[in-house]
Length: 321
Ligand code: DGY
Image (tube, rainbow, N blue to C red; front, side):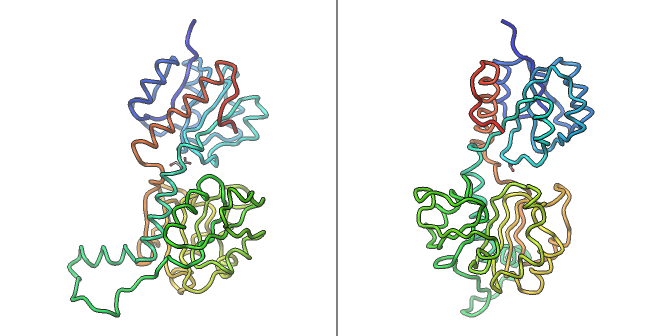
């Protein structure tokens, strides 16, 4: 029996590419170039693809789905984030969609804790001090950060990643509060305190970490108004998506002391980002490395493959959208 035909838009870990090729007739992107929507449609047409495997660097909007040839029956994204996909347009076109949410959980939660600890122990400032030869004699009163232990960590979104962050933060003695639309059952809450609004959560939190998808409700919801609800000297962490934050407001809060520090792995418009962050000593910045471990990137690929195999075997995909 002939293999289904698959277009893959970016290079993936070698093991994943090998496993994909065992099950699919793959058209890879050997140069790993960034493809426009028109490039992807061209490749799909040339390869007469039945399926498409994309990453967060491609933009699959309503125009893309309108132009997509009908022989493509399923699109899987190698990500938990879906803000690059127009899900409604895919559904209207009758294209099945899937993603890889489970694979990313632990690595992303690790980075949230890395950012949280780096921010509250002022790692960026002290790293620069050491590297620039400004390390003076030890003293008891200067260069102080803040303990996470005993502090309220407000999790915005308590899905898989939020819960994994909560597990780690409890080991540091943090007290977990969370906000999302629906309250979790007690077995998932593990003693965390639920808030029915962002304002209620922010008013009690010393630390805040975002774990929400970008939706019309969350786009730009970290803004001057919501930041003003935080206690003075709060610490903000973002491993979700940059477009949920209004950069002007976050930068102003980091400058005027509303926030003591921030740890950011994601930025609006990345890899371009607002370079004013570079001038802020209290901002600890990473280039979207939440899932960047060998094991996680392989697992993401295998989960994508599992979705696609299930689709072509007429079984339910484990992670549909
Ligand atoms: C995701 O899976 O959406 C991550 O942001 C990719 O690193």
